[in-house]
Amino acid sequence: MSDRPTLRHVVFFSAKDKADLPEIVVGLELLAGIPDASLFEVRQNTQSDTLSSEVDVIVYAEFESAKALAAYKAHPLYEASIQAVRPLRDMRIAADF
Image (cartoon, rainbow, N blue to C red; front, side, top):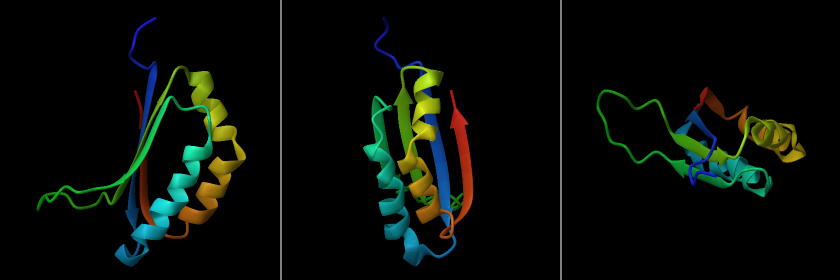
């Protein structure tokens, strides 16, 4: 078995109001309680770039399989995180590779 995960899941968020960033991070950190990811991180974007400032918060997770990612998305904490973050966020872009 390879040391590399089968699937990486990256989600970018922007806040409607930058004052809500701490609350967005807390809402996304709920996802850390889901046991299906082999690695899970929530971080505020520290990039200082005059060409792109849309991304405020990033979620990065690694999964051993598409089945593990599906189980993660089916977990009740996933829905709780959505309910906490959706009203505060503007953009959400997800990518899996």
